[in-house]
Structure formats: structure tokens, C-alpha cells
Length: 404
Image (tube, helix red, strand yellow):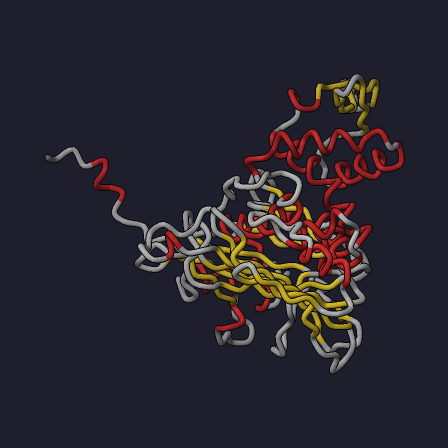
């Protein structure tokens, strides 16, 4: 599970921002079941979902893109680049100093046995700094430095001989991470961390086709296909069954006579005849089912686009409820639909906001930082601007003023 993610100097992010799933001590009430997840014997409790709100162009998606880069660079830096190749990282360019400084990212997470804190500083030329710490999921367990790499020098814990060997033999390229390199040589801790990352999906609306193809791929499993069909049926999409022929998806709908009797089953080419909302809902079905079944993490940009608010509410509720989410799956998403704020879904420490300051830099903060009266409606207060993170809309009528 994710505890925290931090990013500095990436895209519209200038100063360090921190997104946390660690539950606060605030007393919260909600209509829907919303149970915390305990991390071993540490005394730490985590929320199961979090949402980010903010105006258009405030940097909501960039927070997720930072996490996507964090995952991708760890997974691919060893195998997808050669010595001397530039690193595809884009820093904050609206400041003369940060434009030439490295981006920094760090995540704290747990695989159930250990809590890891891993991060790096990276420029387009090289990995400037890299570090990994871990501690057991027990009270008062001490954090141990596994390795620390800076300016071409790396210190390694004595109990990590394979990491030391890779360093001694100079097998880590300047543009690759030690962790990524170690995983290729089956170093135990590195393999565990990359396995955790592979169980963390980051989904963007701009990648709809990739999401669709991934959904089709999993329909060869008959049992899973039936669960996905049920997931669609419960959403009242009118779909009775789904079949796959020659890698093409076909949905089946009931046909009625004038007396309302079912007389036939009519096939439709799914991605041609179904609505965009139905296609998106279906595409998300497998990632959601997989996450809840196996305690994985899913990050979704604009979850609420093209989906009815009640459907989004039910999806979030599946993650918040320990009965449907017994293994501690986590959901992080961005949204515009403020209905979710008044639906009794979230604690204050699950709601985050982004806004840009006067210098064009994204700032991230939590609703938990605000004093909220008992019985207050998050949605109403947000729309009234009490929490910020809303657009400053000018006088649009001037655009249509015919006077010169």
C-alpha cells in the first residue's frame, strides 16, 4: 500500500508536494462504510481511496504523471536505455533556476512485511542521487539504510552483497537506477519493490485505446469474462452478455415484442455501437476487479469523465468498504464532479486540492488542513471557494460584446 508520495521540480510542480494516504487523528463520519487499513503492528492506519480536485490546468493530472514517471523510470531505466542516452524528464520551466535542476521523487510504501522509502533525483543527463531505506512493519522498528548513491559514490548496507557487487564492478550506468539494475540480477529487495510497482496501475484518459486493448485481452478467461459481464449488468447498461470472436468484442442486448416479451438476443459490435461511457466503464472493469481481488493499487485520471456520478460513487464505495476490499486495495483519482463531495464517501484526509500560485507552480493540499463544522457539506463549501482550488472565471460576456 502507498503511504506517501512526494515530487519536486516536475512539469508544473516546482516546490515539494506530498500526497499522503496516512489517516489523520481527526474524527470523521461518513454515510458509506469507510474503514481504515492497519499497517502491521506499526500503529499506522491508511485510507483506502483519495481524490484530487482543482481547476482546469491546476496540475491535477501532473501529480499523477509524476507518479507514472516514478514507476516507469524504476521499471525501465535499466532495460530501455543505453549509456549516454538522455533521460526523458521534464522539469519546471517557469523558473530560471529549477529549469536546470534535477527532478526529485520519493515514495513510501509497504508490501506487508516491510515499509520502504525509496527515491531519486534525476536530470536529463544522469541519476544525481538515489536512496533506499526500509524497516519492518512493527512498532518501534528502526529504519535501515539499504543504500545511498550520490555524485558517483554509493554506500551499501553490509547485508546487501549483490548490490555491493554491482557497485564494485561499475555495472550501474549514470542514466540508470541501481534499484532497476539490481532487479535484473534478481536482488531480493529490488525484485520485491518492482513487483509492488507492477501491481500499481496508472491510467490516463489519453490512453483509452491501450486500456481498451488490455480489457479485451482478459476476456479469454471465461470466469473473469462472466464477472466483467456482471459488473456491466449491475451498472444498468442493458448488456446481457459479452462474447469475443477474432479479438472483436460483441455485446448482446434483449429484443422485445410489442407486448414487452423477450423474443431474441441482439448482438452489437461493442466499440462501435456502445456509448463512450459504456466503453470506459467496461475498460475499467478488469483493473478494478483485479485491484480489489488482489489488494493492488489503481490510479485514474478523470475517473468521473463519461461516467454517471452514481456509478463513480459505487466504484469508490467498493474501495472504501472492507467487505468488498478486504486486502487493502487503494484508489487514487482526479475528478471535477463535486457531487462526490456531498455523497458521504470521504473523510477530510481523503480529499486533496491542487491550485497554481502566481508563478504558475502547482500546490497540493488536503481538506484535513481546514476546520470544517460538523454537518458542513464539503461540496457547497468547495464551490463557494472556501478551500480554494476553483477557477477564477472572468467576464465571458465581453467575448460576445459587439461594441468595439
